[in-house]
Image (tube, rainbow, N blue to C red; front, side, top):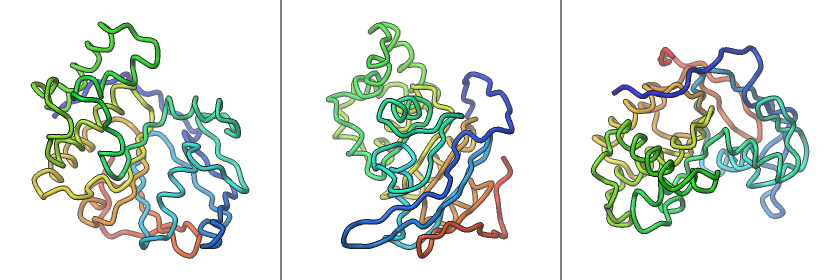
Length: 236
């Protein structure tokens, strides 16, 4: 599969950077302790860890869905503290939720994919054209009028990906993207993601999936994020 997108300019500046990030829940205690991390162009970083280790919390902190207790989140060169600043980050970093049903809320596929461009101020016709092209790029042409909640798990995953890619993000943030997918759907998703130019942060318990995609693997344990040496790492 080929995917056309705007050319990305190589830079030594991190796209997303985290400095000394800590977070604790009232009853669970600390889940992140002085986490440091940087994502660069073309990297596909997989974060591994046990259930409850804080992986999803970390993703939500990066995009501002949760507020850090301590530390800095720097998105595309700007430190993010306020909702306005995180809104700017989210315009360039698309988050794919673990459960597609948390992300799909319009009656039809086309309406779901159009939602983002319309909110950015595109005309209805422009939003339709961008959405149709994105669906075509992902091999999902013909799904425009399908009822979203009647799709299979794999189809829903591809539509959520379309709803993110139509915004032309520089970074994709994927929370357990293979959750509830069968092997055929997983293979298709791997092929799609490998063809995309965006840098990625991926949470996944699926080792085979991770090894096929990752250019770098990290492990989150006891609140600490550490480099994980992998025998098999994908070539970017």
